[in-house]
Length: 318
Image 1 (spheres, rainbow, N blue to C red):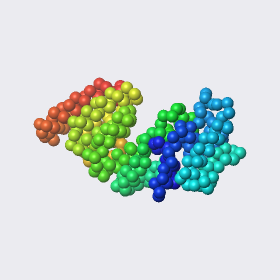
Image 2 (image 1 turned 45 degrees about the horizontal axis):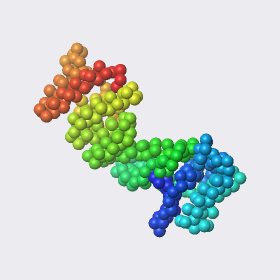
Image 3 (image 1 turned 45 degrees about the vertical axis):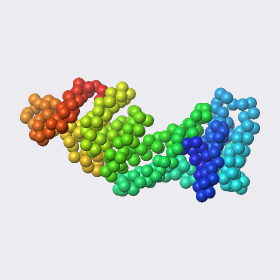
Image 4 (image 1 turned 60 degrees about the horizontal axis):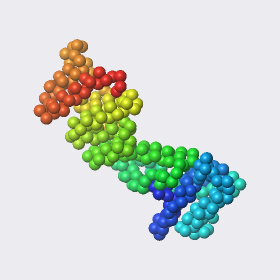
């Protein structure tokens, strides 16, 4: 038996592939409120507020709540039988209680997988990547199916927490992908993640790194210029992206090492090549001449030089 809320809510018997959808928005909210506090009684007053909202409570709300509880119990009985429904969903003086283990909910399974991947990501990034790849498909859509009217505080907090956990899981997935040489594979997924989370600096940074590792440094610089404008307007600074740009400008070894999937650290300032009078732009250009950059590289490097000098003018933003 699995209670699924990472998408349209339903109850699923995995062995028999028997599914009982919850089509009533009020039953969906009721299930969400009970899963927000699994194995603990939720007072009826709170459930009424969750199901109807504070401003639309009907006159006989407690009696109406009983009808929705009966509907949820019937859905459970359709999958587990009447005895299972009575054992799962119980009523007492302190409220209603839904008995469910973490592994019996898609949200619980997702949380367990993310916790396992977090433990593995530094010592076994390959296994962590596999765990996260298997967990993310548990999301079939918005928490509790979205829509259906506003959620009460319990359902809203549950949805917010699960969205944050998915965001964290995506960040770990991209980190482990970069650590295991899957930089080309995750470029399209990173672009999708940025489209969904345009103000996430970490995703922009990871995309810059993935592009650099794929031999597309020019595109990485384009990501920087667009992200800097957008994020500076929102946050006023872009420390991760500035540090990553500095790594690109100096061809830092971190760009190809295992640690490159982590947040970049701004390198210590280099001593001037020919005395203290040299500007950052001049030092960068001189280093590239020493390295003997080819014609194709010089066009990208020249653009990057302009960006780095522009960064000094843009120091108030990031």
